[in-house]
Length: 308
Image 1: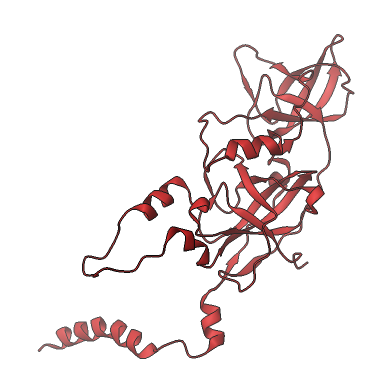
Image 2: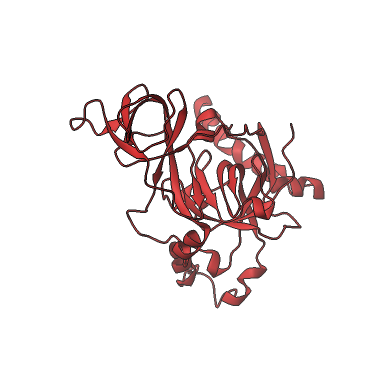
């Protein structure tokens, strides 16, 4: 046997030897650590504060809105630094105004049963588009403004509302999570929508909750995102897979957990989110850490205040 062949056989056998020689987890502390994950958290940037959105309990007024821009009708989208025309009254030269958009889901798809009903109960969904500074008034119902900051392209029909400075949010640089904590708090709310109507979200994505300041939630609070294994907590795909007959061919009459006992499986922590802004019965949040995809419909629980 050549030296080269001996070396190849040694390299192939080394990983197998290391796996066998590693042995079982040696202590309860090590076993607990195996279910604990530490990850870098997504920081909260300036754009995160001003580019999320909110749920309003009642529709906003449509009396003030973007009517056009410098190159209307050849241009229909406006960005930072461009001139726009604002319809309405009460514009003060030099003042900032917020530009928001009344949102609707073009797909009209419910990620979980009853999602539309719960979202409607929480309020009307609006997205932050940016803000502008009023330059001057022209006539009694028109003003000229310049877009100072744009989260997205500003379009005709976007609404104009008073500008408010948003409270800075302190964030963790990293988070450590026990995936299956022995004690879980009672859920205080649910993710009822995402910023772009995505069913699945990850770190950095904005989501909307059906709990707000009336429930004791405030900007800067961290919430755990949790999910159980009950069929009611599964999306349509997971529920269909669970209901199918998937077995190993070599198993003889394997036992199977009944549907009504799925709640006995340990609920799991799948991520965390920091609250960006609140209303009495709703809040916008940013996912800072996710161990797997976050779904619309996942529950949120209270967490300890972030270390500063």
